Length: 142
Image (tube, rainbow, N blue to C red; front, side):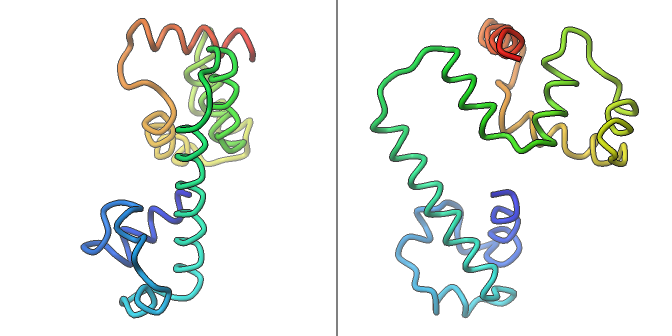
């Protein structure tokens, strides 16, 4: 999904602001844009279909408890984001960036660059009772 967002901003920066803007486009119309190759368009269409399916599933699903919601949230994370967020945010004591990078076999710059992105996608924006609830829920199932 991240690669598709990047493709959207690189190949179609002025044309599409949301998935719904792409809905009426044909494959040939998308391919006519500069920097839009077959792989980019294929990935974009797959991501759009996934986004629509997720929205429809959320719109038609019944309410779930906090533990189920947290499990679904964690299931959306890839392995590195899950490891990074669990070590840096959800642990009772945050692991240092250097220690985490060494443990995961990553460059510390990857942690510095990607932690804010992962937090923005998956963590409530401010410390609040909602944040504390999510953190407590994650710690209880971790």
